[in-house]
Length: 104
Image 1: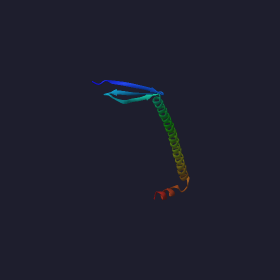
Image 2: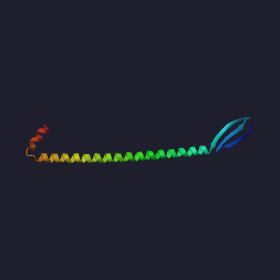
Image 3: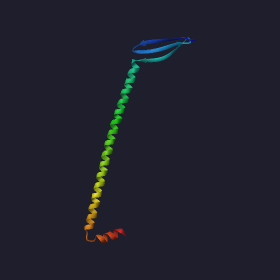
Image 4: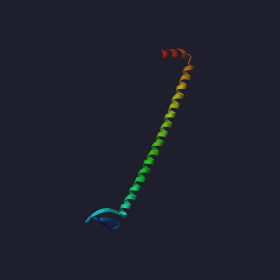
């Protein structure tokens, strides 16, 4: 049965752990304040990336909504123009002849 000993070295806000097992030292972990700061920085970067993505999605949604509103307006105007043209043509004296020539 082998025994296990741990050696913890602390220096400059870092902590390294070594383990003595089967008469050999091996590095087990290196954790310290620096690693925690790196994690916090990464979390902050990830949060900022998510905020930027969210802002871009909102902007895209606004543009899509404006585009849809414009298409609706164009369709309405086109429909109104078509109706006016039909009404004008109906009001013409020779509408029946025009209608026959267009249908043939």
